Length: 148
Image 1 (spheres, rainbow, N blue to C red):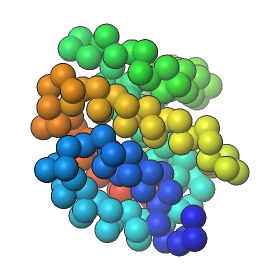
Image 2: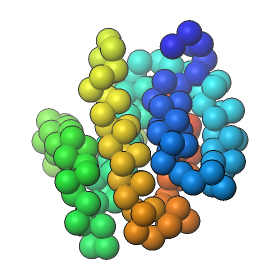
Image 3: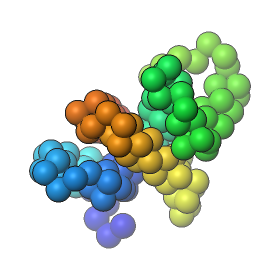
């Protein structure tokens, strides 16, 4: 990405959501796109943002009303399980991960799968219940508030 001030992960999430959303909903993305353009691209912060997507997808498909979508979040389920196993079973909050010095892989392929799984989960929930039922804005807000 040419602009070091833009968040790679948030930009990709918003692009994916924009492709999945109906045209009349896409204007809701604009304020977030503007914020993502200046959110920064620190590799450690970007990893945390990608992990937020994985956690969001896992939490969404873990609910009774969306449990049948578990197949849409296989990577997210695996990564959250593996990180919780590595860090410890008591890990329940991303804030606890702030002390880790992990960062995105050199080409972002791994972490982008977490982002796009969140997009697929969001699109499938929207297909069933409408975009108003998808808490995508909370995910984006959490990603924007994640910093070094």
